[in-house]
Image (cartoon, rainbow, N blue to C red; front, top):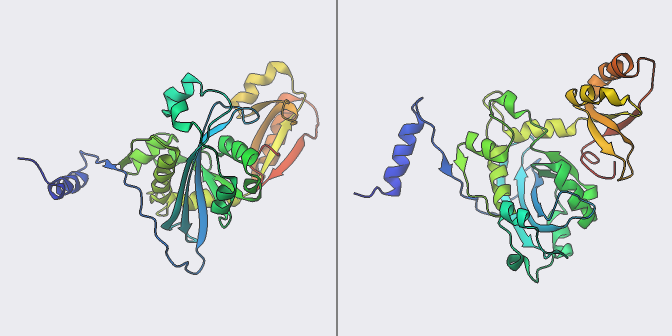
Length: 298
């Protein structure tokens, strides 16, 4: 006898109450609704791009997905305002490895172009843009649509310490499973819907939505410290400490650098002076905020 959806829901509920089972439910995107804005309600954008490659200076966006949502000061998401999904035909054929990863073919994007005015209008009222790898997506988005240069950005992958909150890792699929869902990721907007549920998940460690942690982190200033002209033989030591390499081709220094919180600057400078340069130095410092962090303009 075939079980009805009500029978399956009851079985899932029973299993979820047992310590021996975990239940994953298929993610159903939230219904778009025009809710009246309450006191303190703000609007955010979840964004995901698919591109022909990893270089924001030359590769092209072939798909843009966005979900516009409203949230309260405590990080609770109160509704989905709108969604946006569109393809764009690049100037070259889509590389086979990109099609293998994204499922996007040349036939799917043929003849399609971004409506730049529509993109700008969609994000205009948002106070923050969030991507699950803002270090990647922001650079591409700013190159195509200057309005993103004016927005605060948050990164759901790096600005929440997911492992500290009990998750196995920071990949979107892991996080979605941890929140009790699974989804068949085919389009960029599908990943935005998945990210919405992840950010609305109440963290057992704080009793608040994950979005609240992200917003708190995004509001803090960070400082970028450039370890210019550091000895080559110490590169592994710098990498272990979290430094990344800038090759200097995008106008930034050719140097190792690291981003730290304001409270950690003195300790990092002490490390450079005692372990790297072996003398008193004054490295180049840059203060970053949500309006400049992850941007190629810094």
